[in-house]
Length: 180
Image (cartoon, rainbow, N blue to C red; front, side):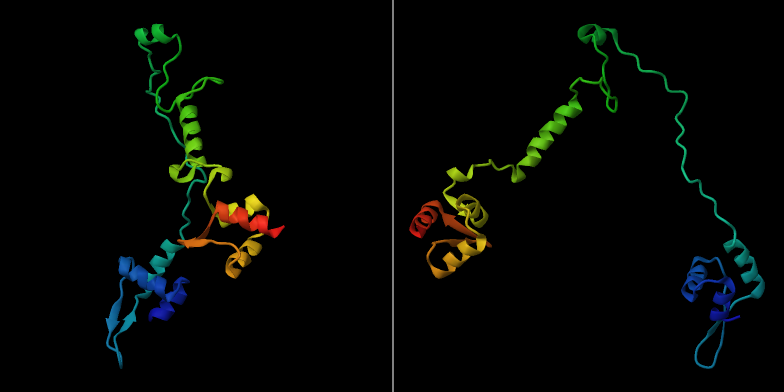
């Protein structure tokens, strides 16, 4: 039986059949052909392998986690208990409701740090000397396109720093004063 016939017999692709041969699950015998060697498979071996492929594989829908029964409850040393009169918490244990624990303190610190990207201090727009295009837009109420047109026409002085425009506060104030 050649490759295509064997693949059709097993109900798999030719590439899958080649993978089974590479894995050593099926043996193949090559015989001399007109132009190149041809693969020949044994009929009885293919029938036995087809039986293996058709075996249902049963996996549990949910893996059960068994906890060892030999775990003893933790004992709190008496000197710690008399000092605090509260239970000592170990890693992975949850504190009582309403009590601010270490996890809550750490999460508040992380939230505070995430609020400021790159850990740079935040300065109000009113105190900045150089403004980005979006800050100038927010400060003046003018549209981004209006400000960009003013820069391109030379009415508003600005400088490209990196890939964004920077506008001096004084130049922006002069431009806005000249509008009215």
